[in-house]
Image 1 (spheres, rainbow, N blue to C red):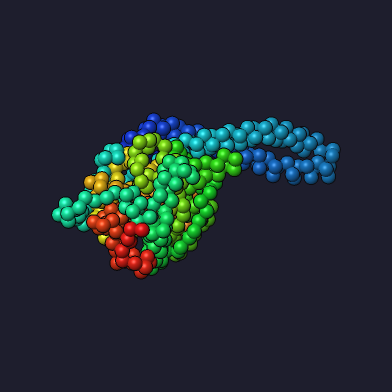
Image 2 (cartoon, rainbow, N blue to C red):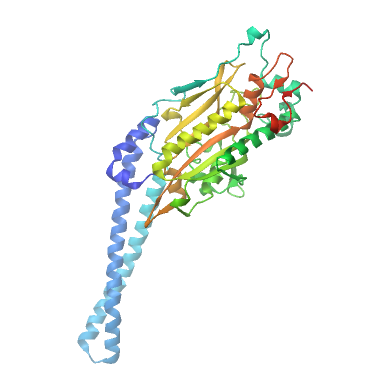
Length: 434
């Protein structure tokens, strides 16, 4: 949710943000009207309630006076008039309360249709309109080495590391087994990622992967992303597509001391995505799958520190990629490709030799106060209580990092060199064919 002051004082900011996202601008006009109705209905209720309280203060003493002197006709008449007014007012108060509740509910529902305000520095456009901020490393020229690179699935089969056929047999398409060196490689990546994060003060967390509708809605995953969410209808629960969801909900409805910020968490979880709309895309291998593991960073901080924290998260993601010695580029994601909660998002895309292109392996989003307001998370700063900011960043999405590792570090005989930073966690410097 966005600060209502922006709607009341600068609605054109919201209209421009919606336009840049390619989303409905008219929803802002409707929201302006609903917000006006909400405030008017609340004002009407407050005035009637105040009058009701004032009547109660007058009725009490009069009742006492009439009780002491039943023959006081003037006091009795005044009491009867006030009681009649109170009776009629009671119905008005109930109606006003119901109207205020209805207006507030309609406004709240309309707010859920509005995405976060985009950072005006983000490039405008769709998925292909990103801006390249930096390219790091040089892709290998396999032709000069005398062999054609194998793709990750062929390498995974040679190494006995990836089995998609049995994954499909057990669970259907876009599922897979990591076996032998594949399973050990994921565990090594997990330990390397968590070791790096904890060295920077992140608190490690293994969160639940089933969450309530409020947690999913509060983080913005029941809007445009809803089609890719798995729902357990019998229990009204959702399987998370990222640890961002439970980590964001960790402090829902809490007030955090400002001097405890930033609070940084690193979570490891399995993630589940339906991949609706991706029919025919990345059907080979483990680039686009329904279940995968991921290490996710999540930060609660002061709003004024969010931009610098965003740069730090990107720096930690880059450090991790540098340790893996994989060529990559950093992009500023275009407004039309942002999630509903993100104001700005940076992706790191790794070079995939057999595809001759870069593919996303990590991302980091500054969600400003959007998620915190939806989840009721605030901070106490001196005598003031106000919203805080949240940010998220993927440190290691296991399947895609494994794809990039295998393809970029392969050798002619099908073996794969292990980067020095990963060797202590894997216990070897080479993955050899089984």
